[in-house]
Amino acid sequence: MKKGNELRPHIGIYGRRNYGKSSLINKITKQDIAIVSDIAGTTTDIVRKAIEIFQIGPVVMIDTAGIDDIGELGKLRVQKTLESLDLIDFAILLIAYNTFDEIEKNLITEFKNRNIPFIIVHNKSDIESLSPDLKNKLEQNYNVPVIDCSTKNDDLQSLIDLLKLYIPESAFKTPNVIGNIVNPGSIVLLITPIDSEAPEGRLILPQVQTIRDVLDNDSIAIVCKETEAEQVIKTISPEPSLVITDSQVFSFVNNIIPEHILLTSFSILLASKKGEFNYYVKGTPYIDELKDNDKILILESCTHEVTCDDDIGRVKIPRWLSEYTGKKLEFKIVSGLENIKNINDYAMVIQCGGCVVTRKQLELRLRPAIDAGIPVSNYGMTIAYTKGIFKRAIQPFVKN
Ligand SMILES: Nc1nc2c(ncn2[C@@H]2O[C@H](COP(=O)(O)OP(=O)(O)OP(=O)(O)O)[C@@H](O)[C@H]2O)c(=O)[nH]1
Ligand SMILES: [Mg+2]
Image (cartoon, rainbow, N blue to C red):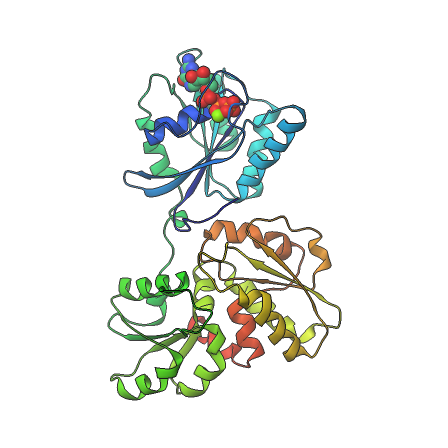
């Protein structure tokens, strides 16, 4: 499935066929986005729509196929619906006709397994309103709000108010880590090589996001290529408090930036915004333990033509890791949300910066590896490690 809109909370709607999931999406978005019909199984594919909810801001709504679908194709649809749980920050469980049994219970178990907050919406109240007994029972059992509505008659304002209240702030606010490192007014020097692999006419997403973070922190961003970096360092006054470089020129930049100036890379910065920073810090030194024939799983989150330099995961990291360890290593690259099979076969997992995915998505992506006790690292930290500058590169994020 295509990803993107990494800063928007993703809200998924789940429930049985024909209960009004698509109607609900249309009502919330005030648009005819999803096909609605009285034939059960109308929605067969995941439908995503970026919308703006007043006071929450931009979100992505995800409509899914009914969780009770049957037959060969139906089972595949249910599987797709369950896979979409790895994308979302918040779920709406839609019920109707006061029906709540194993199907709904299992869905809630799936939400809970992934720490997905949710609310329960009883629809079609114009046909049968939510019984006070069921409402009480659900509210007590699950400790979540349960509301009654009709997508046919109601304006759903109370649902939108609930969403505002219940969507966790962490789903739409990414921490501004620059603010934890430097004071407002400080100069931050960003080093971005422009070589043949750089995308034509633009900067890649992690660089753009970092510039925005620097500005949000009322700091000053100076951007140059590595070829001008030494000159910039010598001429600007006061000197930069922090230098953020593209990992690929880490060694070079490490040599020209005086030791007392903090230095890190775009992807390590990203790892501290989202992802599993502490696990990466713990997992990266495992590089020294790698043995011949160990398998390394490289996870890249994006369709790279959009954002990243795919060469890093596919060519450079394998090369640098092999050179550094002197071992014969095997690499497997998995992109996007492609299924990861046999996680226990891997000695180590290395994740990209994840600039196009939400924090939650990255967290869920790495969970199987972390649960299996497999060391995880990320692109920036792995590169820093193989270049002997790991300690310096994570120093800005280590609390003294
Ligand atoms: N009376 C009444 N009918 C509704 C309500 N909400 C939806 N419907 C009708 O229920 C039928 C199914 O609605 P959909 O929105 O397509 O349901 P869905 O859950 O998306 O169904 P699938 O895509 O098949 O899983 C349509 O005929 C809707 O018009 C409601 O609140 N009241
Ligand atoms: Mg539908």
